Amino acid sequence: MHNLEQIRAKNAYAVSVNMQIKGKQGGQVVKKLPPLIINHGLLAVLAYALDSSDGYQTVFDELAKHLADSQIRHLPEKYEKSCVGLLKYLALEADSKQLKLCTSEALAWFNYARRLVKKEV
Image (cartoon, rainbow, N blue to C red; front, top):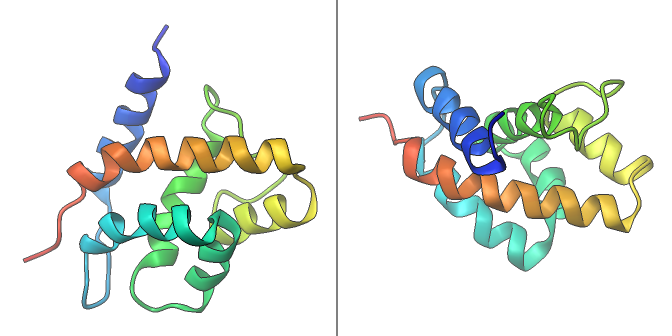
């Protein structure tokens, strides 16, 4: 059985191997998201990501997959594992405790993702 740190690292590593972030900022987007979440909240940044073309939505799609992981289970199975699915869940069904849990887990996951996902050169 893996602990939470191992699960976060595994999921972030999988993203770093498979994902190419499009846009002028590339992998730098991953480094910019935690401060935005801290300052504006997860819901606001998710909403912004849907309207952005800088790779934010791609990163949140990967975060949603992490939150839906069978060992994390913060995103219910009935929601799509994407930025849209995560936003729908948090805006329509989740209570404040679940929003805090998702925000906390997102920031913990970003601690690994921002070190592993690199800007394409």
